[in-house]
Image (cartoon, rainbow, N blue to C red):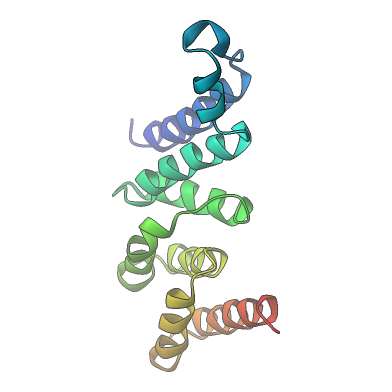
Length: 152
């Protein structure tokens, strides 16, 4: 049952976003007239990404490794569209405290994709204390990628 739970949670995240995206448009004229139409966000896709981001934050805070690993993978893949800054400390905690080096490495890449100056500052300071050569090299690559994206 424990192997099915992370897959089920990720499936629910994906289906929730898909169901929201495929729903029929609301006939706003029938509800409140013109005032309601003006108050609705003109970019429904942005609202979907906000909802998806909130679900990812919940998943990143999960104690289930499969759920948090799946969420980190989605953050890495859709980094330009999601905002999971509320889970910054949770991802740092995965990097610092997890016993699996692969999870720690994935957390490092996720921190880089979160595009947070605080995360990069943390990684810059932590690099000198990292004992694993693989993680140290990953840190350097993440820091270098961030600096390259923010030049000039």
